[in-house]
Length: 188
Image (cartoon, rainbow, N blue to C red; front, side):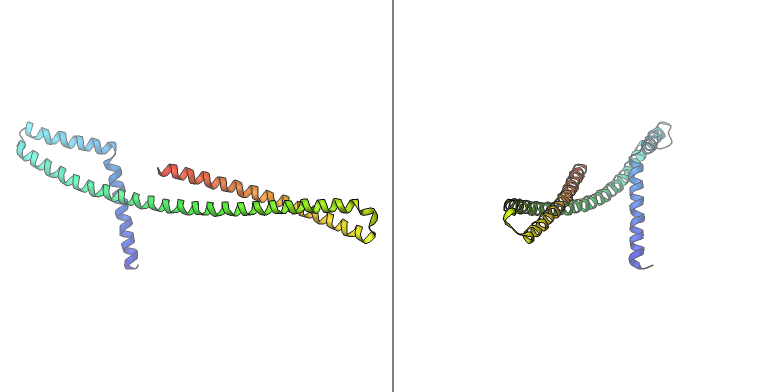
């Protein structure tokens, strides 16, 4: 095991100890233990076992040391929480950037579909014009018209498929926006 791995393992162990201490300090058992210690400390002078001055000196010293260590543990916990919050903020910013890019892509696709729709409308008008002039055209022209019509119907099916893809992308975008909003609310 390298020095870096040993160091990381020791840090993880200390973080677990810190988490346990912070949990225990904020628990009912901690409240009970502290209450019992204070009661015993104040009862010692009452029963004449220890002088009041000595009891107060020892109790004050112990409480001061406990407060110092609690402050250190609390600050360690706050620092770790701050690191986690920063990581979450970075993730949210990346997600928002991705959402913006997807929105731009969807807008471009929508514009392309509108252009294609206009082109299809123009082609349909041309086909209608050709159909009106059909009596004057020869057999080869009729074959070309039939081929144009088949291309139009093929294009229509392609457009339908593209619209379905856009609808799916739009739904996914909405889901991403909702997830981002929920993450923002959780962090606040």
